[in-house]
Image (cartoon, rainbow, N blue to C red; front, side, top):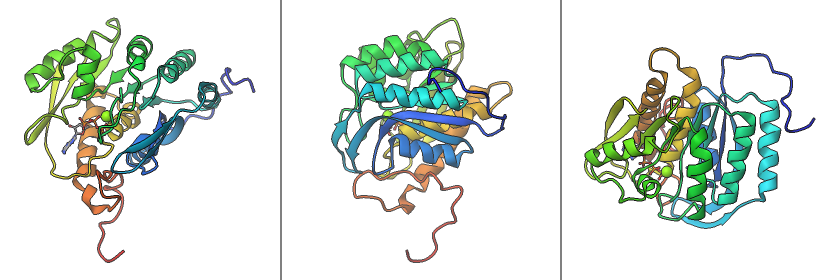
Length: 292
Ligand SMILES: Nc1ncnc2c1ncn2[C@@H]1O[C@H](COP(=O)(O)OP(=O)(O)OP(=O)(O)O)[C@@H](O)[C@H]1O
Ligand SMILES: [Mg+2]
């Protein structure tokens, strides 16, 4: 089969197919592996395209390997030629060349429901995106994104300003971020407030018209590795499952509610000694009762 041609359609199912195009974190708390857990926990069939490999644990990133972009192109083309994908989550891309390749192939396949997490820095502080890739992301991927999910430092970089430090500053940043997306169609910004100080966190959801404030209590745990990856993949899994008056808002609210549960139960896992993962299957697995 020619990889650039769509195969005959598979029979329809009510279970959405969702793909993560991102990096791999061997500790499974972030990246493609965490995204697959998220899709599985939220009723979507998960696929994964590996854009970068990392050597990483809960304490930090010790190496990054970016496979040849020809092979990334082949992964994307082979998958999209066969599988009808109802949403695409984009995470760590690593370099400008990878970013350009992903943008080119998603445009070719007219990918729908693109949730773009503009990953730049890991929770450990390690850089995950070359500086030269930022302009490429803005120019080639933002026009295709249905929803972008920057955290506060990423918002600062994208807007070439100081990172927002208050909810009031977040309002202005969300408005300016929306201006980086096409104005002619429905596009969304979810500005994540995980880096705000204090006991209450606020995320802002903005479509250019309505600003929705999404407050949540800060949960006291050091195990927050991959919260951003997990949230964006949860939204990608849930977007195709929501209809009705405000489907995007409903998907984002459900994704955040589920993530709060995953953070609240994170300490039940014992994975590494740094920032451990959240508990993706907190709503599905029985509570631990006895010794391991
Ligand atoms: N301790 C916490 N308690 C409750 N919610 C949290 C906590 N930390 C983060 N969140 C929520 O998790 C989501 C991810 O936000 P955050 O700003 O941490 O993303 P991020 O910096 O991209 O994460 P990552 O470092 O995993 O890439 C947001 O909805 C945020 O409000
Ligand atoms: Mg992040």
